[in-house]
Length: 290
Image (cartoon, rainbow, N blue to C red; front, side, top):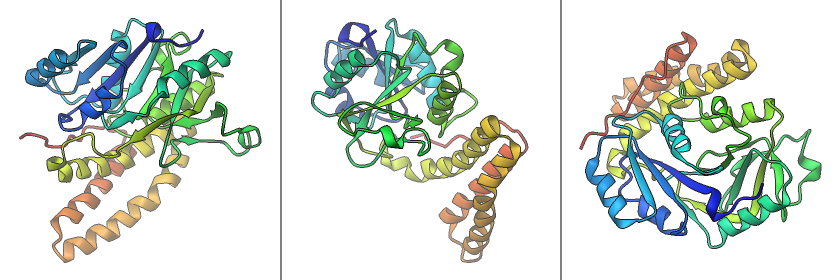
């Protein structure tokens, strides 16, 4: 089944994204429905978006529930067969959607399709399985795509294969892609469909320190959780322990020179590792109060 404007919904999860989201929304055709899931109770933000964009519905999650859980709300709300997940700091290049529509008509079977980020690869290819078959001018099969732009085929992805809500931030897209591959599904990059990811601009810059603290905590937590879930405890330990050990050394150094920011960053890495090691939830949340 090919993708068209009539069977596509775009889902964008936001949090303190007022300064960036318009660039994303303006790059989307006005005849395609958009669902914005705002991870707060910001009624003013909701009202402004729904007034400005007639094809947009904004759902308030009422709290910071994370990217995966927010995306799940949007996916379940969408009435179409296909859902394009976008971060609010992603801008579609001209004809990106048309290229995806064309590629979908040429593919007999797919679970996930993603456009190509113009600055750096937003995908991972298994050298053993796919490298020899890649033609960079045509849609090509990959193992994983980055979560800031990925189109889901809901006919192939049943509800149990949506985003794992145990993951608050980082690798929720890898987890979804890994489960798709494990179930025999297929994932494609469409190289002629281009996007521009502004990178790390989702949340207002004034919260940059809090966001950095959160990223460091969740990156190592999610890395341990993901590897343990798919490849076992020993693999998770092997992948994460070097970063944990390095973080102890760096924390000690920055503690001694009283660099509060760096000290907090590496303390959070240590904390994230220990919480994942002990099977604790991804509980850490940044302080984003104005």
